[in-house]
Length: 96
Figure 1 (cartoon, rainbow, N blue to C red):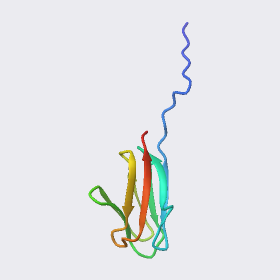
Figure 2: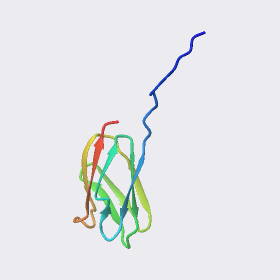
Figure 3: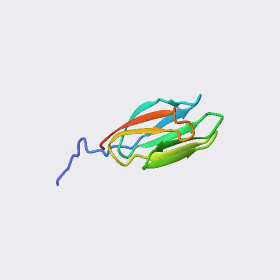
Figure 4: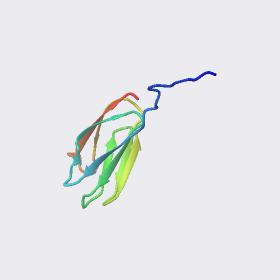
C-alpha cells in the first residue's frame, strides 16, 4: 500500500473586496487585492456613480445598487467616478 500525504497544497481562494460609495467618496479609497479577487462597489449615495479606469473598464453603480469586477492583472489600478472626477480610488493588485 502507498499513502500520499499532501501538505500545504491548497488553492488560493479568491476574495470579494467591498468598497462603499457614500458622501461622494470611495471607502476605502485605497485597497489591496490579488489577481482573481472581485471588487464590489456598493453605492449608498443619493446619486449614481461609476468606477472607471480610462481605456480599461467603466462600471456603472446605480443608486443603492452594487457592481463588481474580477481583477485580471497585477499592478496598481487608479480609478475615478466619471460623473464626479474628484472621487478617486486605487487598488494595489498582487499576483495570484
